[in-house]
Length: 115
Length: 115
DNA sequence: CGGGGTGTTCGATGAAAACCATACACTCGC
DNA sequence: GCGAGTGTATGGTTTTCATCGAACACCCCG
Image (cartoon, rainbow over all chains, first blue to last red):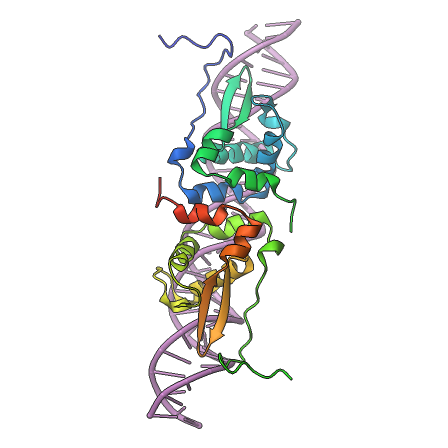
């Protein structure tokens, strides 16, 4: 019982996740309406699942703020995290999120850098 | 020149509009990520174009705040306003906005009240 | 078991945004 | 023109949120 995972040996407090289905539209929009988080999502979208650690993103904020942003994205059902040794790797919840908010993800990704 | 409109006789400062095409995704998301504005958009979606005056919406804020919210929606290319006598009537820019952010509007409208 | 690497938590700070009350501007009907 | 009705602008308060620095927790490697 409660035997720890051998492959991803980690018994750190597992990150709390919210399934997209339990996320209000407003929360999802608010989560994506931030430049830093938008960058995270986009960079994540261009990478393989579980291939990026939290610290591997190119954003102009400190560790603390970064950690906070990931918590927000988790709470909005946009990303999933898993502990892998000392690191925490990420995955974009493409399908689940798409099921809840069809088109939204594609919208912010295709997103024309601006204008 | 500059003959005033006869039908909607008004020479008040015309409200400034931003076309959806000139709106950054972030701005659009931020505009919709507010409970009051979301209510405005939804109520507006359930009414005929130009049928609703600013004051005719059921939101728990004062006139000043309301006016501000409409300005934000205008700046995000979501609503269009026109002066009609002493009143200012509204219209949801369905098609134009849909062209710029396909699916987004439908998403916030279908929006399951919550969860 | 000690230390480097990684990420979270805490407390505080600063900026942005929502809000209100008041005062003003404009249109219309009398 | 006055006065009611409608919306905007201004100034100031409150709340919210992004951010940082520092302290802490955890994992691994030697």
